[in-house]
Length: 415
Image 1 (cartoon, rainbow, N blue to C red):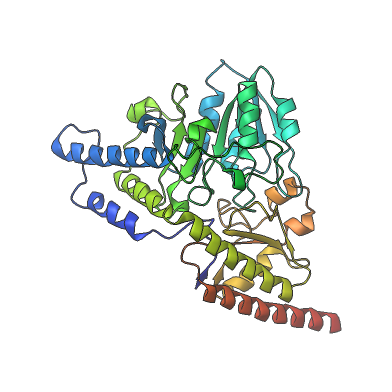
Image 2: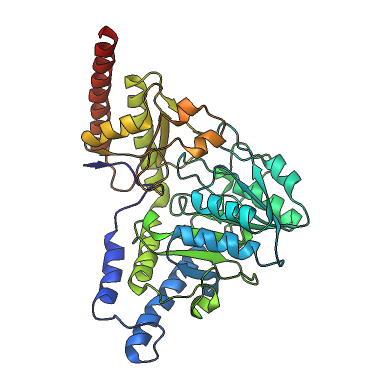
């Protein structure tokens, strides 16, 4: 099997597995219990919180453990939007967001009296910054823009977005589920969006680096969502960064866990594994992303030779190294994915959160691409275990697919 769906989920790394094992066996206590077994479990959670806070250069109490990226996004969007008034208000987001944000914002709009401004995106997938600046009003409670898109890999100009929100005095949340461990949390000058008009002050070498960042995450956003299984950790674990001093309304009830922000007995093993995976994923980040970018570009080169009508989707100069989203004119996504699966290649048509369904990408449609192009899109996403041989074998598989499709088309035309 050739696995090219790392944006959907990643394999558990050895570091995470080793960190989890003690809490799946002898250290099984409830971390809320006051006895020795409970204190052992609590210590593991505290250590994981400290480790993640250190990696992000934030305070430990700014980390809220959750059950994954979707919950983290829901807690941020619903919890922050509901916090400042009794009912109603104004929220800004984009139709290119993951459904974890998209559906939460739609719920506020449909059921809680909120007004919503949906930002336009260019054909390259970049949100309209002028529209963002003009859309913010006194009653705007929250802006939620993802850092990197899970389907196209397109990276938003987060520093400019942050500057607009800071100047207007509005809270900014970002879904960083797909970008963690792949790009710096705080963009550096060389990694700023090519569409950005503002100049970034060169990094002060006296400031310690986090992800190659200029500053801590709190200087960029007020809240950010993360999911362990996207960076080689276990499924069912995530966390929300929430800047100090901000209040948030819980979206679940039943306990005082996580400083009364997220109730429920913590998944100790998964939290320990998540912290270990985060540390592991950041090792040699820049070198690994360069390697993946080279493999991705080689895959596209081979695909373009085999399918001359294929088109890449999204801003190709400012995207995740792991992601190649391409449309195959005349071949619907489901047909291509089934053909790839028969060849032992795992890919997807976009988000993995649609319960196995293959539908036209809402992201590509929001970018203004045609239904035909959106319905023929396939996402290949690479990871740390992807090899040059796998890329070559995938290209050979696609050559066989092309021959079969051409043969079937010719037979149909003759008939």
